[in-house]
Image (cartoon, rainbow, N blue to C red; front, top):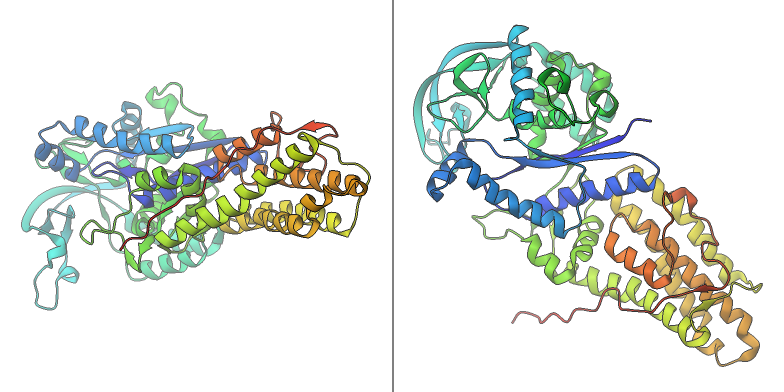
Length: 524
């Protein structure tokens, strides 16, 4: 079986990361960890988009070279990924010489195949958005709005990609391959947008005298590649595409890795970049329909219904959140409170509740009191014994049913439902404590066998939970297993979860609060 290749949109290094960046990377990391736990070899690629006119201007304003500027911003991203325990296998930086070689080789292939042409163009140009404008962008008063910033008239020669030659193929491909875009309803958005747009080609260059911070075209020394054949190509350049041809040593085996099982992107860059430009670029390069990647499109984190933006002052800093709620607490909230592919509203009240009520009061308290009772009544030694009743059987059934449901939901990108499947064990185990009352059983020597059974069932159920939730909260679940005194054997898979992981005579560790409750003062 081919490795599971998962990658994310590379982050534009013109500003530090926000919660949307964090969500996307944690989502990819969770899926990568889950696939490994499910028996797949995984290659997880992420990185940074470092070229462009905005970067060039920001660097000039800061009095830095473009490379020094993007290196500084990139450090904010890599530090956050380290803090949030995002563990990638490959790192894509568009300033990497290996990437530049592949991009130039791709452009040369398309040029030689007659897929690129040069023509003069004139029109109104938005300096802020780095694009030419049409009459569609004019407001009711006939002027270009403030959102476009400074608008000037420009005339220049540019290179174009024959996008229009491939749009009919793309429409047919999308209709015939419903698995191309997840969630499926996004495909309809793409098809609707493609209607009536078949005659537009894609400008792929900028004059070097205007944009010097980019990859030069191999067939035109006065032009620089503009964004699309640079940023989008990272998905294949760092996966080993053309590695032998361009002399890129140490790259993955492209034939074994490609196509990508999941390219995780935000809905704002689905159209036209990833759903139109990217598959057509691949098609023009000779990639077959079977070699097209799968796009996983996530929604936005809004604040009170409004998209996060600097102008509104509602950008959420994930560094602050992870400092307050712990990295795993933030990972849990991000995965639990949004359905993949749809928008969610960030709520300070909700993240506090998810940490204090669900993590501290639900899972953390269950672990702490289960181990505490076992230590108090049995010195931490577990003995399953022969006692059994319907209450025990019901808990075992919940544990057994959680795994297949968890697998179904996680494989289907319903991460929040996968968490819910595992959480059924937590909820049932807490109710199990309330119904069996081990603290009462401990007072009656005649109930010793039943107490042994109750304590064992709690520890065993928690062990299963620690495995199922490990992709979401890797550090916390490793800590939980350490307190239980059980480590996952090397190569342990979800399919290995069977009742009886803890042997008779198993010694539990010392209980330490897994998620200490937070006392957060309310704003007045």
